[in-house]
Length: 118
Image (cartoon, rainbow, N blue to C red):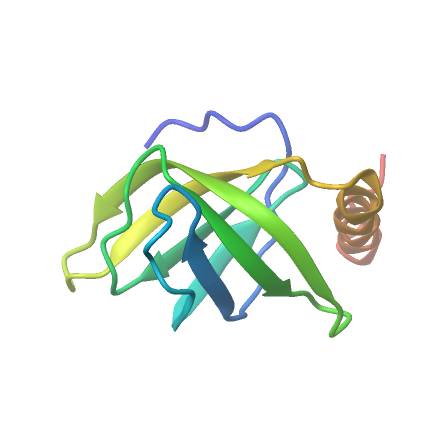
């Protein structure tokens, strides 16, 4: 797959709560996901539930500092893996600047630890 991101992605392992904001009758349900990567622009993850491209989901993402970021994600890409899981690419909708900065700081610290600081 060709890289289309403008921001470097950061890998995390976490779980989030998903709520489809496009469906008023949908209940918020905890969906087990595995976060593959996260950047200040979006989150990539895999899950066993087929989500809808274009749908917006409310999320509570537990980050590396054990803080929880409340955000909204719009699904922009879905692929099904050979094991039947769905690989989802999402973008943040209205992510507060403070939370985007948290992700940027973590990215900078990773670069320093890896000896890649600019």
